[in-house]
Amino acid sequence: MPQALRRQLHLANARASRREAEMLSTSAQCPMPNAQLPKGVFIMTELAPIIQLGNPTLRQKAAWVENIQDEHIQKLIEDLVATVAKANGVGIAAPQVAQSYRLFIVASRPNARYPNAPEMQPTAMINPKIIAHSTEVVKDWEGCLSVPGIRGLVPRYKSIEVEYTDCQGNLQKQELTDFIARIFQHESDHLDGIVFVDRLENTLDMITEQEYQQRVVNN
Image (cartoon, rainbow, N blue to C red; front, top):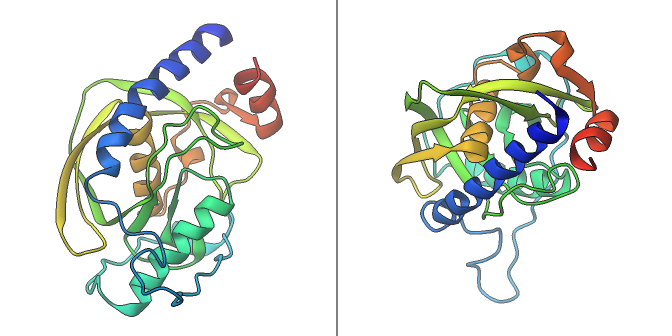
């Protein structure tokens, strides 16, 4: 497919996902750190070190979260939200910070790495699973904070029906499409020890971050 046409399709998917991100942001988002605390009282969030490909934790099957209200899990959620924002990501999974739990954050927003991403409030998804998916599969570019410097054209289901528990302990069911569905599938893979390069159909579908910025973002 010509690069110009591929970029047009990428932008169209981003616009469609923007509407979906707005709906997702009003349903199951967690409060931002310190948002509901009394004036003058703050929780110290930390930027968690992001582990990279080769670390064995990235290849492990993550453990089910048994107690969502556990102080460690709630603090982990806060740290993941802060970390993904600082790293210019659109999602991050607990195993990426060496915490092998079935938990990830979907936090799409325009940034230097994803300038056309739809904007939404960070949403914690705990013990997530895909319960149905479309037959249509779409290839689009992905990167990963744990695989720096590389982008790849990854096939993903265009739409998925998902189930997860939010940070308040409520069960959520939603249908996700396009870019937000892609983030969910990418982060869900991390919980099973899979990284996006494992999904590539051909090594020719892989380019450097520099080439991606020049050929796709700035084309």
